[in-house]
Amino acid sequence: MHDFDAGAFAAGDLDATAADMSARWEHRWPDAEPSGPSLRAAFPDRWVRLYTLPEGRRPARTADDRAEVRRRVDAVRAALAGAGTSLVVGEDWGAGDGAGGWTRDLLPGARPWRIAHGDDAPSYFWVASPDETAALIDAVGDDRAALLFTDTGLRWALSPYDGGMDVFLSDAATRDEIARRFADWASPRPDGL
Image (cartoon, rainbow, N blue to C red; front, side, top):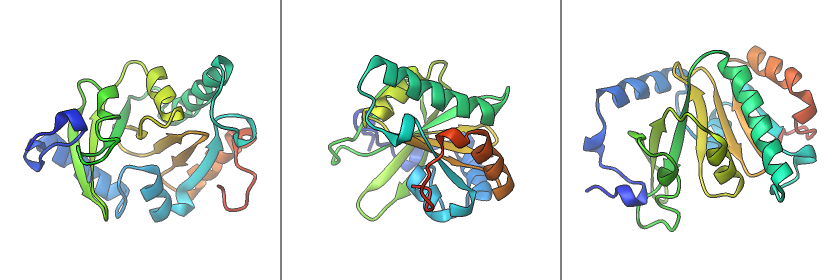
């Protein structure tokens, strides 16, 4: 059954490209799905949290706030990607979920990637290579999308949320380097939250 309007897809919609990407994901990020909460639980030693507004303030209330959120997410994404290509992974849900379809609608042309069967309902992950990210970042800040940015090699992941971004790196040394580089935006809490 196809429920594209709601963000769901059938396992039969997954092709060889999706299977290859899933194999690479499992190699780099075993036991985690491509979402901030899942990665944070599986890889706390490779995670750093950065604020998207001063002192973790949220939500973005003004045009200046929105511009600052976009600037910070784009700065970290550029530092991670270098000259490489970024992908965006959108998490979505089926018609039974009130938010089903919200992320998919923001990613025209996205390809079905993988299905995660959670406790409550399955999550459907879509992947795209967007030219423009401002509307995507704004949607996350408004709590209207669940996104994760990564590179084609899946070496890093950046998961923005309304108030910050969780960054996941290939190892603790690289995490420390990013944490130092963006220290002014880091959470001051010992637990990183």
